[in-house]
Image 1 (cartoon, one colour):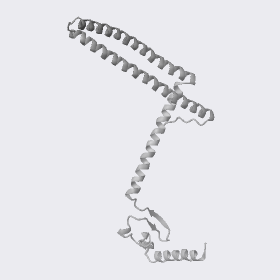
Image 2 (cartoon, rainbow, N blue to C red; image 1 turned 90 degrees about the vertical axis):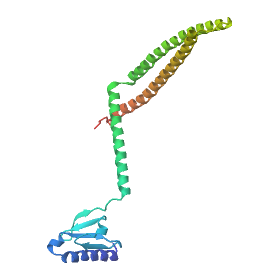
Image 3 (cartoon, helix red, strand yellow; image 1 turned 90 degrees about the horizontal axis):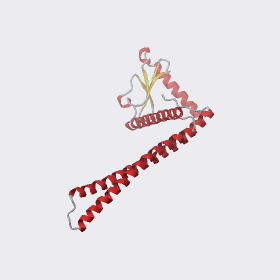
Length: 221
């Protein structure tokens, strides 16, 4: 610390002491200290209105700071605090949700083989449904082929095709389309199961490693 800095500190202490001594005991307990627009330290029994939103201090009759009042926060500071609080709450919510999923995963399976068997069982069950649906589509196609032949024979004979046959043809085509879409959806479901279990198996390995290392934490507040 150089001499100039030391002199400034002693001057500030001396000024504070003189100000405190100039107040009566009742006033001294309410002595305020603040910084004005020029960066100068000021003292008084109350903070002027123009500095009310800035930081200030209250001194006792020994000149010791007994209370500090922080400066009022700007709208930008308040908005930033709210943003950070929201972000923290979202992160905590995700952490708790993940902890619950981890706990369920460990409670459901004891090893990867169980997970693979469960995955394959779900996929095979859907595959059985797809086979049944394909069989249904084949029967509808056969029926549609028969209906189309009947319509073609009537047209070749110069006879009108009854509305009932036209309706059956239209319905058969619609049924084939609906069943085809159903199969596509079931295949997407199978793929979703594969992707889900791929993620869960990877997470299961991580949890097992953490358990072995003694760092596993699936607690949810």
